[in-house]
Length: 221
View 1 (cartoon, one colour):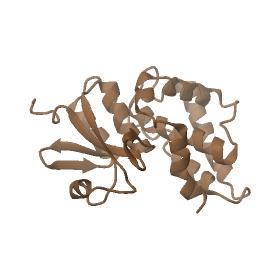
View 2 (tube, one colour):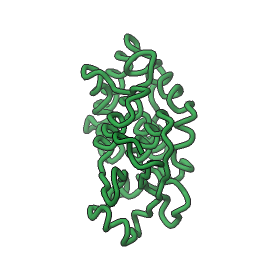
View 3 (cartoon, one colour):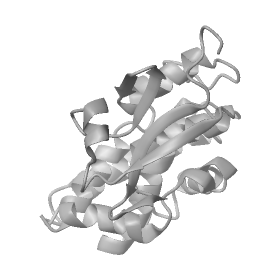
View 4 (cartoon, rainbow, N blue to C red):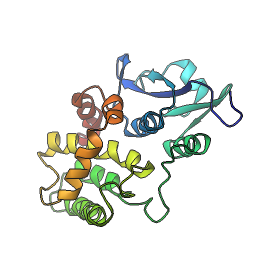
């Protein structure tokens, strides 16, 4: 093993479908890590954990019980997708997917705006408009800088945003009969570009129904 590499193959713990530790679940933060590994062509093994019935071995590794978790050394694991993807980028710099600082925060408020709108029960609370404002800002950025956030080449910012946009599309369509407006042509083209990548197809939730089931408790709270 090279001095600056992670254990080979890289081991990462991600969410499974509730009741089935053989089926990849619906966590967008887990998918972000898997996308990074896929795009860098790093060999990896996934350990799937049912978060509704967390096994003892997992809680010993990560007492907080959160995923994703990455093994970085013997008996040493780290969580948080921000930290994990940064470590992967540092350990495996080629190809580089680092996003320039001035573009790294593009689209960063879309997910929280989506969640607020999804959970909202008041059509006049401004949550829909707040989401539209964030999507409009992304559309304007892509119009000038696209097709990806950093131009012609995909980067870490896209790996972070792609799973969140997927959850946005699936959940809002199901729960609110809402879709990204057609006039946001650059955002719509961007989502198609991301979702059609082989890496995305390999790492997305096994079925849209799992995304819907994952958000249902929050919608119905």
